[in-house]
Image 1 (tube, rainbow, N blue to C red):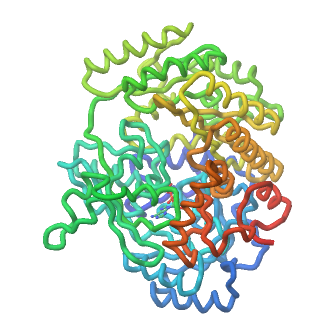
Image 2 (image 1 turned 90 degrees about the vertical axis):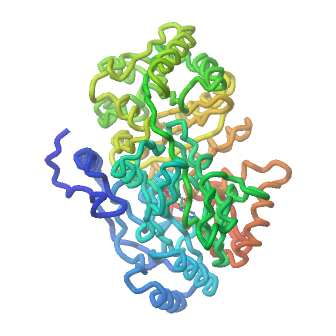
Image 3 (image 1 turned 30 degrees about the vertical axis):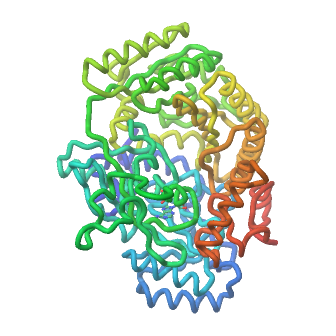
Length: 606
Ligand code: ADP
């Protein structure tokens, strides 16, 4: 791939808190060039609607007056009105004005303004301001949860609180306790580089791409791939601004340290005493998390490997082999099982390189193309990593190889057996806590690519794996979209992750993708499977499937929401939780509203 790009390089980490480490400068230029060269959409189009989009129940005059007050509180430079053309950018230079990966029309999910607090006190002031004016606010940390809504608020016209820009300090790294305390704007890249700079023998755990917020990803319950891969399970202690403006510390942080210091076990013991409250601040709209502790993993030896399987029909048998290995904790991390079509996509080459026709790439075309790759004409690929000393890793690999040998044709390979450009080398980095960029490459699959994730939780069992796979495959065929599955398989459940990649310039492709999401959510829920996370426009639908006991869970969440946020100002609608003020007034998306928006109907009350 040529690196003599006509695009300016992405900002570096030394120049900008959200930038790219120097070690990845060249990879950044390559990735940017590849993605932007595969774009036919103009950088921006003139906005059609009134700008800025004002908050609900607020006149333009009231909005202007309220914003004037906010500028007095934060300074004019820290309040930006969202009235410029919308630019989607790319991962490292993403907008904070809208959802860059729009599935509804680009202008639907926009904020009225973006504000940049520089301290916890300023966050409290913003929240008090929001209560006074009844204007909804929507906090983001880095805004890089692409595929889930990015930086867009669920209610158009909300004021986005971009916490990361000015609150991006690593407040502490405790090498003895193997933990850290961070603000919202600390990315995986930044935390990793700081640990290297201090030469500490500690690993972080990173998702597939390293630009996200350590704090934001954990509270949205994101995952990574070292033994510390469950981010929320490895957080320890939070500081939260409540919707009233009050400040709360959870866990041991609630017990004051000596002489006003932070409690010495704030980052050591999670639940402390009494109800364990942290959970209600994840995937919710009950508070703004301004500080969070995370555990770090002591560094160790590691060995990544892959195992290929020759036939599509091997899928249920592979799951049956993984279950006991994972339950015995023999697998070092949460392994990934990918279909070979993902091997084509991760090369960064467009789909048109492999298939010239229209519609989903046929199995034969996948087979022919895979045959020319290092991995060969296989079907499923298992990516794992083992940890420990060399002797123990070698024993573990023997046991794993032996277990999979039940499946005819299974073949284990190590990174040294594969060419330098094979993605296993990238996986080996991720699985040892080194944040990277390469997993953006599959976005080159179609022009102007964006993606949505559909990720049901499925028992680690052959019959369930088959049931979900059949639904998902049938509906992908119905809507004429490529099926790109990756499974993160644990001992008792697996996240069956489908990546719907669509062309942002095609209203038809967006409509089919939205309909596919809607039908997959409904059909899998009817069989008892539910999603662990979803894009903001599908959160009502997913939350609606968790309806046991006459919606007991949602009624419980609404009770908490109304008690903590009586004016309904904090991220209304996030995770399907609507405050009383908005509830039942036409904001909920339970049917074809996303598709209708593509036909020109507005999202929200009519
Ligand atoms: P990333 O870590 O991937 O960059 P974001 O900053 O976009 O992610 O966070 C993901 C989502 O989590 C946001 O859209 C927002 O709804 C929620 N969120 C992020 N940071 C906070 C926070 N500090 N307090 C409350 N909610 C947050």
